[in-house]
Image (cartoon, rainbow, N blue to C red; front, side, top):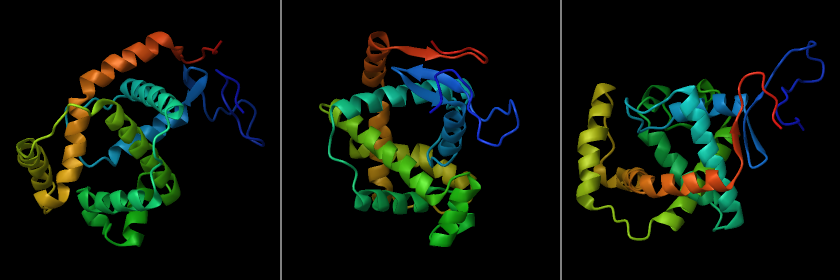
Length: 220
């Protein structure tokens, strides 16, 4: 176990060889430099990222803080766990959705594993990350979705104005609207609950203890 604020070293490593450091402490839980690196690699795999999204390291740290705050609350209000069947179904859809996957032949297990490995994950690591993502989204949906409705027109508009240009730019045949609409609905739902979620996170930060560490700073 690494003490808060202290860099970690492995047995046998050269004296003073720093392998990790604490970048933030959230209600006693640590976010490490390696967590930030992993999150940035994980975000690269998301199929619907837009060019104007903030992908900076600082923004990634804040996103990890928000995710940890939500997951801490989710642990206090447990919902139905994500089953292997649900996870497998969404991963199979993901393999068809990611434009870059075409060149790796992600429709095959070997191609999918090669693609995941190229982004620095093992299959098991990525399954774990995607399951956590599904749990986080399910918690948000249960907590905030009441009263929010995503219309068919909203889904069609996103498909035509956001997805199709991305696939065209990559010269990849897009999936049909009817097969991808559940995923688009999920994306739009996240956007709709954004304001509610931000207000809630502001409240969680005020109630809890969140500290972003500077390089060389030791956590209290």
